[in-house]
Image (cartoon, rainbow, N blue to C red; front, side, top):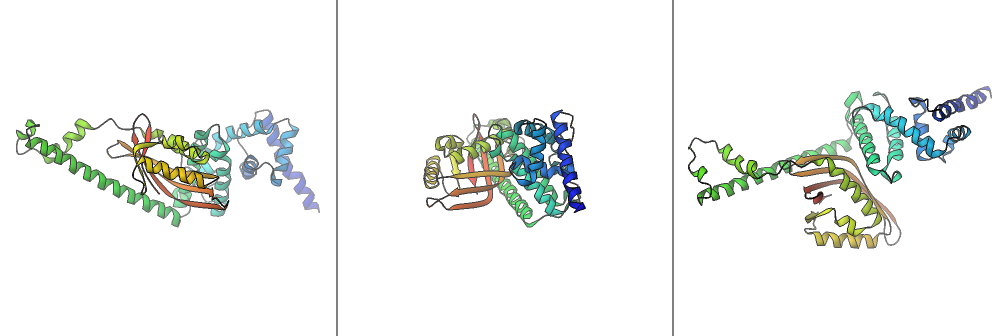
Length: 334
């Protein structure tokens, strides 16, 4: 009985100190030992495990919105100020047991999921990406964490296959470009090539059109924004908004033109009363001599069919973006 009384006295004490420090804006760091409870309060304030925290905030006149805002500010300093893949992003030591790391990862994702922050989706997506990077680092054994799992090996294999595919595409493009140069030379349209010394390196001929005609490198930093817009338009069933994200020359799996893609989504939206899609573990880079952007991600789709049965699908999706006024989807594979 004595142990139970001590438990009741000690546990609420930290909540009292936390609430008082937040109310007076004197806190510089959230208590690591109670970070899971704080995250649970942010995502599920009605949970019985967070009742003491809710009462403590109320005693000090802190509304839920005010307390949550100040906690998020502290979490930004505490978890997201280091490198993207740092173990500090999860707020755990490198030698933490895998089951504890998974629990922390799930709670952070529940707190920062973009669906919970509809007014600032980019802010939330940036943080979920950092959480995913830190969790991947744990799974791959970086920073002294555990060895890679089968799932991350699959991701790495897909990434390697994509790199090999794009290397082949770039090789074919260079061969085609060289063919056009040689044809032009034979017709007399490039007399400089005809008069060039025989000792000239073939590499110089190969590189001429790439230097003369290549557009400036595309900035792939903005590729995250169309993915966020895709998620929102897909969930809302806004067909016109969704299709503005596609290039007129777009292809998606077996759909080879913009019109067929639109028809497929119109039929899908008609058959699914509710649906959502989420992209995580997004990787973006420039490809094809920096004139396109390639994005790979893990996707999760949840939807109801016409009989109101619930379904869930996950997999890997690849986007190829072309540059126009904005970055538009040129190809999509999943």
